[in-house]
Image (cartoon, rainbow, N blue to C red; front, side, top):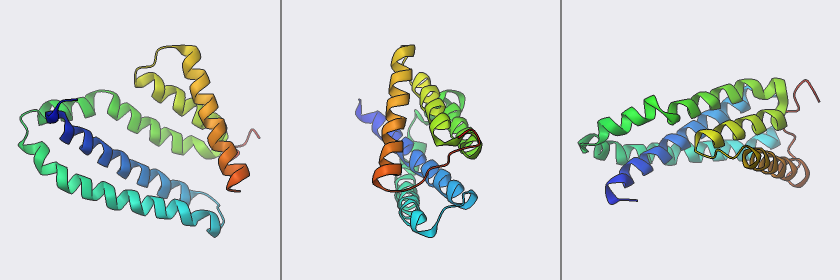
Length: 152
């Protein structure tokens, strides 16, 4: 990675933190979760909001000074970044209906494909195994019930 790409990378991390914050708040406000199960996600969302905002406030002036900023913002709005944000919105909408397992496997598979992995078996194995590990941790270790959906 070149030094001139660093502000763009940090800015992208800030955007992702803010998107994570929005997804968590959306899930908490639309879900029927006990108050004990909402504490940690709220803290994570507040942390993402604070750190994402600080990153954006620090990096935004640097990006606008850059001669490459038009190229960078063109990449975000015309390419994969916008599709991934759209996938996050669709993911949060479908989560209650289809449940955590099916929705997350689909989201992970689509995102992995968009990010460049073309091996279909690898995409299925990665998205399924990582979703099952997260489900096991939350359900059995942390005792947090994830959305089951109407099919389960």
